[in-house]
Image 1 (cartoon, rainbow, N blue to C red):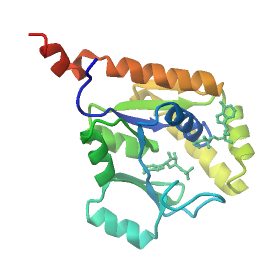
Image 2 (cartoon, protein in one colour):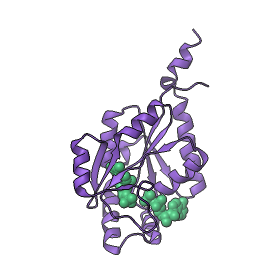
Image 3 (spheres, rainbow, N blue to C red):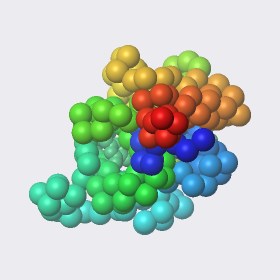
Length: 202
Ligand code: ADP
Ligand code: 5GP
């Protein structure tokens, strides 16, 4: 089936530690044509994170300059650091027909919705608050005070779930990836996204 010529924009949010990164990485392994947008951030790199791979790690001044140059589709401050989605690559990928994933927090996602109303909004949820804490602690990438801040923010983020189109329960990774794939398949089959193909019959 010839789908809409433009790619699908998938916006993935969820509380820190829910497993957004893990689910997206697994989805991307199975769907290598999908493009994962690399954000810019003022956060310091974690051990093993590489500039230009996980994030573009930039200074606060560089971040502000990019805002002034309208270089971000959206940006937000999360737990004391700035994060933003660079505009150029996302537009280029969507125009070329590739699906794009933005893995971003809630405030930024809502800004994307006003500019891209046709985007699909997915919210990754953990099985419980206790499991969220276990995963965040178990990941071992943040100090205790940062974990506490992220868990506090998680309560607010979860209260925003109703603004999204779908939840993806990440209890078991394999099931979560299947849910993700099923949503993408269904969204691609929407009549509204296949007008050109449908009209080709008349
Ligand atoms: P996020 O990107 O939402 O902050 P991560 O993808 O970094 O979360 O996952 C947080 C931690 O939870 C990681 O250590 C990851 O390996 C683990 N994790 C992710 N998904 C699952 C799952 N389905 N079951 C158990 N642990 C998981
Ligand atoms: P982390 O520090 O764990 O990598 O990311 C913290 C939060 O920032 C996560 O919820 C992540 O999805 C979000 N995030 C990452 N990149 C962006 C971005 O470009 N814009 C926004 N608004 N949030 C982002």
